[in-house]
Amino acid sequence: MKTLVTMGRGGTGKTSFVALQTKYFLEQNDAPLLLVDLDPDQNLAEMVGIDLEKEGVKTIAELVTETFIKKGGTMTGIAPKERIESQVLKEGLYEGSHFDLIAVGTKWIEGCYCMPDAALKGALESLAKNYRYILVDSPAGLEHLNRKVTAQVTDIFDVMGPSHKSLLHVQRADRISREVGITFDRFFIIGGCLFPLGLEKKAQEETGQQYLGKIVFDPLVQESVIAGRSLLDIPDSSPAYRSVCILMDNAGYRKVGSG
Image (tube, rainbow, N blue to C red; front, side, top):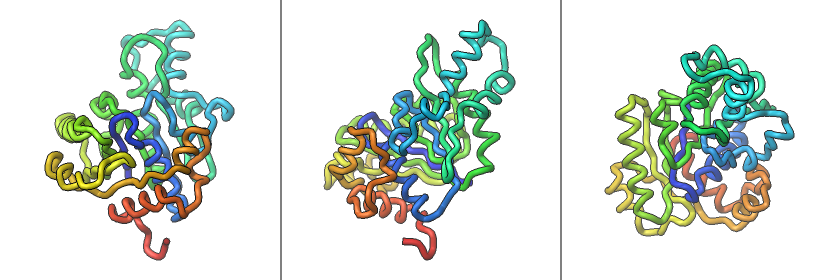
């Protein structure tokens, strides 16, 4: 099992990248996959064609609220593993034919994400062995990373936008990962579709990380995201998808004999 974490500031295209990563692995018959959406905006499900509400699947934040707030419980002094993990596995996991998905979701009550993150960490410990790859969509804020939702990561992909803040985000993510004890094999930086050409060397020098390549802008991907259509259905000839294939190939994920 390998865990691939994608992060980056809002608007860089990281969730689209995770969706296209999913298509990449499915096209290679490299499954089963587990998709993990840590972003409170929870857009990943829609981008891979899943309506969680229609499927009767709840987010972890919803399950925490139901278990500890609506039912009169308390979050103080109760081990999350004992109270919430079984509910997450029962009601919070979308199970498909080739990939499953779990989402932290939007928390509508006061307080931090400590409880949902702890519940997710426990669920992942139980689920991880069932998958070939776990693809994690992490938000711009690094609080989930800081709480070690997943402590062992194979590769980190940081998608950069056209701003100096994206470079700073890479530096902070690398520092936090090391300081809280998250182990990872490789840290890649990727240019989002708006990342200016010609800045690859500067990005690599300022972050100290390997620049893997750039995601090509594709109007079809943009239209699909706006319309809420699955990115898994875009044609293989899509410039954005082809560029993601090249990025993943460069990272060493192409199976022998595929493509």
